[in-house]
Length: 122
Image (cartoon, rainbow, N blue to C red; front, side, top):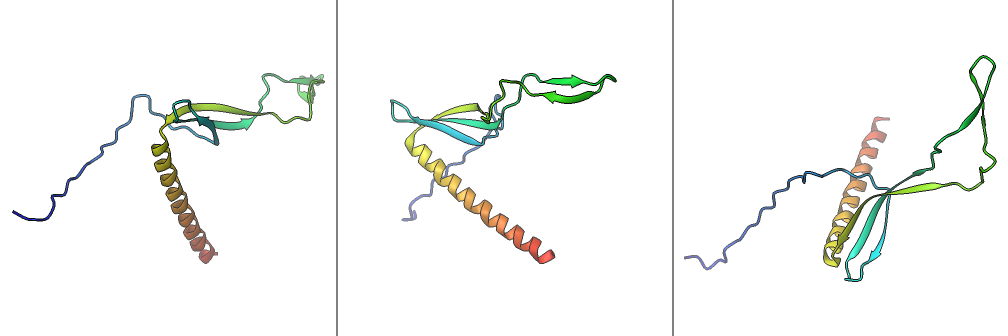
């Protein structure tokens, strides 16, 4: 019998849950829960789109110009639509943060390589 320690392996098989979906997130908001976990809401951010608008009609039936509502203000409204909420433990959050930073680094390196190749072609 060998004196070398036996190597144990674990294999993770990934499958999609029936309600799996891809979520586009432009940001996140959240905080620490009373139990010490992190609560994170992923949101998509976009400009306000009115429910209706009003136009002046030309005699021939074509649109002339849009009537600006007297309630219109100088304030720009932005909607942050929450797409999903995540509750995660601190250790898991730290592991995901490290993973994200590694992927950001890889993406930046790939982008730099692509730009370098593009610049050589020009």
